[in-house]
Amino acid sequence: MITAIVFDVDDTLYDLQSPFKEAISKNFPSINGQKTEVLFDTYRYYSDLAFHQAYQENWSQFDYDHYRLGHMLAHFTDIDLRADQTRAFKADYQAALGRIRLFPYMQQLLELLLETNFPRAVLTNGEVDHQSLKIKGLALEKYFDSQHLLISGSTPYHKPDPRLFNLASQIWDFEPSQTLYIGDAYVNDMMGAAKAGWQTLWFNHRRRPLPPHQGPIHNFECETDEEVLNWVNHHVLEA
Image (cartoon, rainbow, N blue to C red; front, side):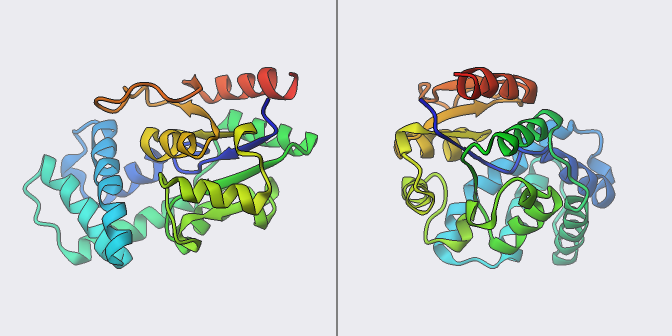
C-alpha cells in the first residue's frame, strides 16, 4: 500500500539538461561538438562527488560551482577555467532555470494528485536559495503547500543520508513503509529512501545502468514520464 508520494526535483520533475546545455553553448561553444549527454553526465558526476565534501567542509557556492565545472571541462578541453568564466556560466545557467518547465506527464500527475488531494511532498538536495529558484520556476507552490517542500540545505542532512528521509517522514507524518519516493538518481534517491524504509520508483529516463557493484534495491522502475503517470494511476490511485 502507498499512502503518500514524495518527489525529487532535479531531472525528475524537469529536464536538468536543458539549462545546462544552454549555458554551455553560450559560454563554451568550442565543446559543442561533444554530446550533451556525455558533458551533462560528467558534470553531474563531479556535482555529486563534490556535494558531500562541500557540505562537510562548508564550501562557498562559488567554490562548488568552480570545482564541478572545471573538472568537467578538464575531461574534454585544455581550458584553464577562470573565476569570471564560472560566474558567467552560473549567471546564464540561473537565467535558464527561469525558463524550465515540468515534464508534460509529470505535470499531469501533479494535477491528478492535486485534484484527488492525495498526500504528496517534495524532497530535494541543495542550497536553499538555488533550489527555491527551481521551485518557483516550476510553479510547484501550485501543487504543494510550503510545509511539503523540503530542501536539504534547510536541515542538518542531505541525500542519501537516511536521516533526511526520516526527518521528512516526521515533519509530514508520513508512514515510511507506505511512502513512495520518485527520483532519477540511484545513489541519492533510491538508496537513501530505501535505507529509510520508503518504497522507491526509479525514474530512469536517462537509461543509466546500476552503479558498479550495486544490486537492484529499487521497488519499481519507469523510463518515461508517461510511464510514471500510468504506473501511479494504476497502482496507487486506482488500487
